[in-house]
Image 1 (cartoon, rainbow, N blue to C red):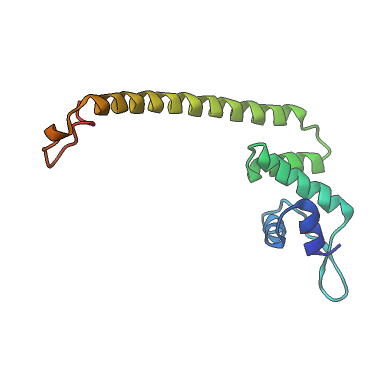
Image 2: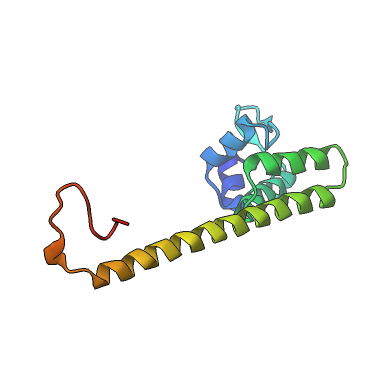
Length: 131
């Protein structure tokens, strides 16, 4: 199949397919006599895996690691689980950070609601943000 057909089947653009080839995620395809890329049906599965890995939060480098292991005939379950667990831990840290920021902003909002705007006359400071 040609690159446009592959891109459509994988729900990406032809530019994305060419990029994945350039960074080694997709193997270079054969070429037709007229020079067009000629992809096998396996390319669709690989492309969909890359897309799904990204949608799951994995980076392209991580998807490439998994694909490299698969290409070498290695089992990837433990490796993938470790990646997923690391991403979960990162998300937990982000959530904690966001909750702390929300608490700070909530406190500032409450402070702002209790202040008199007529007292906001310092040209170098905001009474809402002053501690």
